[in-house]
Length: 310
Image (cartoon, rainbow, N blue to C red):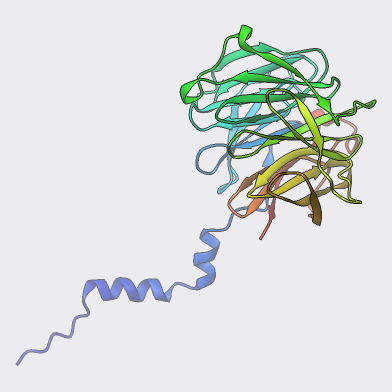
């Protein structure tokens, strides 16, 4: 009787896998805590695209950088243009369009998130076009120097509107326009029926009707989110980037967006005046604008920082 002393191939494979240290397997799935951006890039907005892709824009010349959250590698997708600025941004997965707020130009830009080609430029209003959020119905842009926002209605599959279709919506209700920066970060509920806008100067959050512009103050009790910049939802939790405070406030909101509570603040030793954040998995990614921290932004080092939110 002949005994087969050879181990079956599938058992060898299993043994090899089991022999790999757990730390080695974990290392292969580790996302970098800090992602370097091009020297002198001076970022402000960030958005997550398909897969591990992220985008960030430059306050120097409006260039758009596309990177990989998993590898930390990236490249310039949209070359800079003298006099152009890229502030907040949002990616529409339906069309692959990247919407970008144009800051002091009063414009909004739309780029192809895959090729970098410019799809459209819209004239919105005088002031500072600061941030944007996309719903199935429209793209909404804030203006930090005017008590209004802008609605760009989107067609099937995220089809872009004509300039004539752009609507200027006045903020009303509880909204109070103060001196300095006012409306800044903007978010939306999953169904697109309500917007949330932060007033950077007053440190208040507002629930806003996207069609009428009527704003209701969200009751945060004794809490404020001063220097509130970018907003990002994860479920019913709203994260508010507080740039000058080097922190992100985690706000637990009720289902009607009538009240909320700052339950904790997230910090990182890698923060250097973060401005906006995007969510990917169980982490936030915030870009460091380093406002007032460097004598020459055009030659400084910049990065994006990963912050776990488990």
